[in-house]
Length: 500
Image (cartoon, rainbow, N blue to C red; front, top):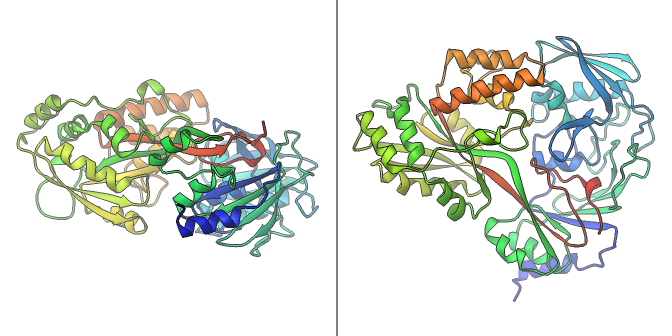
């Protein structure tokens, strides 16, 4: 028997599904229709079907041309973009370099949105209607990587009014009712020759997981992109339903504060042997199966598949070995263990609070008496910044998908006046590693970047300041009447959806 709330949703959706209409259910509505006013990845992913950036990503997250046909660094501080000709916004107005300049300035002015992606841009030069130069404050080899979600609006009609959107992308906005439904229709005047098969899209925010999953096998919904791991086995058995799983960009790891920490007592985590003992005491496979429901990939790096710099052969965590863990604690003169508080978010990563709770009995076998301090997601960043905890759970998304960005944020010493270490809450400061990361920040050659990333990753692993637990897995399900392409960043590219 279907519960009343679920029945109401199913009844609402129980309308004939047209062959070229796709209904997509998510757990929440769009945060806004303004692509410069939000950093929400889900919202930007949807809006990326209406608007476009200078670049876009392939299914494996490589960059490819979008509104720019080519780009290159003509000087250490200057990137030149040749823009696509013959492109029009949905209202028919032509796209030009002036629209790029307008959109970058608008993004820079909004601290809640894409400002961080364009923060290194000091000036935008409009060379001609189809050429633009971006002048940076310092050499910035990752600038094109960050421009994929800096979406371009028309300078004449920027579409800031709720319910309106004027992009250049493959879909137009038909209607938007916040908290209810968003309707899109294919833009038949889109510049790209590669056209998908879906004509109409309806985006339905359905907070109840039970309601979303009930609507899928019933045929009232075609695609669900937020699925609890415990529901996967049941969905696999439903006729007409296809489950799609793949690696996500988010890596979940433990972080250890190795420096002075607020509060009395010494810090046992300042000893690398203690940190390595903790690593050997954690049974990652049990966490993956029993806590994550299989929706995880074991990790040895703070970045996973789909990220430039990822080496599969290096992405293996420490072996679960209690004897080795006990020997390391004994070497550190802590054979009886010690008390330790673990700060843990609730609602940031999949099963984050449950994951932290599962670590307590594992570490208890070493005598480490773990107290889990659960903090609501909204307050978690501020709590970490205060550096009151010696251990914490970190859910890190490599965006843009480039290991250099992760290293600069997490592994370089904190530099309040510069671009490094803003999310380094560990007190970690290794001069040799800082130098590698600084060199990486100014290196344009991909082969040299990879070499620097490999050296930095080896140092970070040896010092065990971060302990990667797993890379999350994306789980989607869809009716067998459609075919979807799943990207590691979780973006649904509507133009890539096909019909059998």
